[in-house]
Image 1 (cartoon, rainbow, N blue to C red):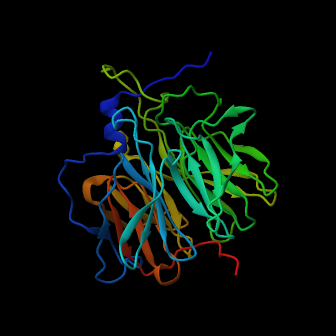
Image 2: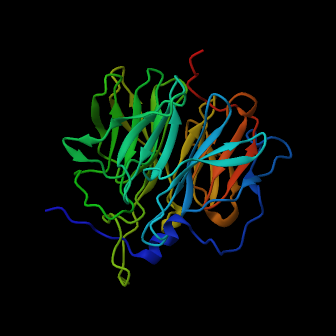
Length: 353
């Protein structure tokens, strides 16, 4: 029997927005030694403040230098708003609504043909992966079901050098019943075949691939272990906080993976707001991880290189730009978008010419 299980709303707010009214930390405050990541004198710059939903997510840059990002709403506390995908011009700092309703879009990425690939989540969203031709505006569904059942809530995605799409499918919220037996990670082949490739991550969230295309990284953020959706509003009992880690997998030639183990374990996660969310890599393979309170950068061996405090303690995801913005991080938070200049160039699969 399918049941919708619910997370306690006050706790869920603490998980996803995390202290909106708390004391703002110093913008760009860094904790590091011998930092070779952040550009000299660089500070976080607030470039967009118009978020209308619960949090911003999924930033990615198009071939023409336009940034796209999601504005996620939660209908239980936001009057049934239907979500937005924003387009943002970093030259003019002008933002426009690209798509609304968004299908409850979360993670976004561009394939090497310049098509926008979107993870549509739960809470009246599509619960699918959609590709939009940016020249015509027309979209097709790449993955809508697995074993004839809807996905939980596609969260984030990455595309490998062969054009295969990998996406995470946890469930953190939404009123729909949960029909998949696991919070899994899936692969979409070029011929459209969808395969479940990872079932050992309690709540897979962010996802990235190393520049040599040999390693897949998953941020495991099991904020409320054993709970999916939202508990009744009046629930005041205990909940179990699960593991937060960056899991490491070897990518085999056929696109399947072998589990290596946790690359990074966040042992200090004693509350839901200390997990890990979006992940990106630079050309040297360093990992940039949105950790709500802060942005952390680790070497490919799991050594912490730098820690950057985030205003309002609500970092959700990030990306490197392209072209003149290739060394600029775009960081999404609860309602705002920030930029930060770095010494490193972000890694991307190149667009076709």
